[in-house]
Image (cartoon, rainbow, N blue to C red):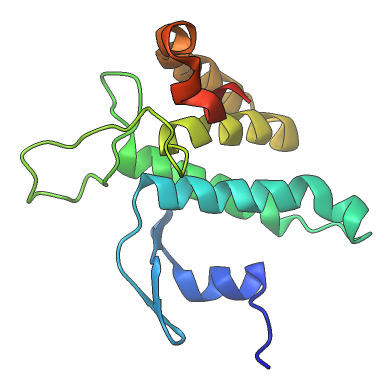
Length: 162
């Protein structure tokens, strides 16, 4: 029987750090990770790290600061790669995609909630876990994009509302 992958092993295999940015590789062949992560990949990896950061100390009895730090690095990279600077929201693909006529945003939750919905959770958790005011400001800015959707079609943005 093979050993289950731990978060630390997953991080060391799937994430490459370079010049204050992260590259997340999301396709695994054996032990090799390839492929370029999209917004949802980055935000869900960050949500996993944040869930562990908020529970590891009481569940395992051990403080583990890496979880929150790694989540913060993922979300900081997400801002640099995916954020639509003049408008609200984040694009599905990174800014390095020059082969596309336009980059789209996904707001609505499907079988997997949208990366933009996931960011609401990440900004909220980071503001609490790190105490850094920038995450509270990002949350306040990002939530405004969901106001109309929450009133008109709440079932389409359920993850953002939880």
